[in-house]
Picture 1 (spheres, rainbow, N blue to C red):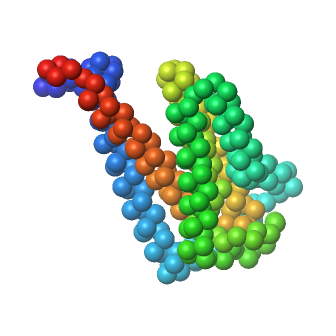
Picture 2: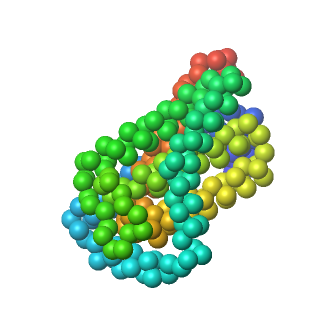
Length: 236
């Protein structure tokens, strides 16, 4: 038992980097599996209109708390989940390119591009209309899943990952993760508040974004793992 805990402590102390990456891969597989499984379940419920009563009830409740001072904040959070995300992504790609972080630039670009493509394909596949209960502005695309939820999770989660990657500070990573979680939550809530999404759209967007994020990182971690295994001298 003591040797087991000693081995685990070595892994998390990064004395055994391949084993640490292996654990990260296993954990990522679990997250990826459950996120896509729950997304499929919610999608089946939505397409069979099993969620519509609850969706409308929650939507009406959220609309009921609207006020003149809250609405500008919700518009702001909605903005940074779409146009703000796009503008920020361009700046970050330029910055990473200037600093010659080629791998990070590639991963960041791939995550965002796949997110945008997935959003369009999923919306067109399900073709679910937007809510029509006092929306505060008009939207021309379909409702399910929420592109704001999906792409804000991809964008801000990647930024949070990069904070730890570049600083190696657990405290900064924790603060960044906390801030990111709150921000992503507010962006999703703003879409319901503005009356342009059902709650199920937002939840599905988060799940789809989580699956894409984790899966892409899994691919990178898997490549790292096999590279380390090849480079590790036999007998070590």
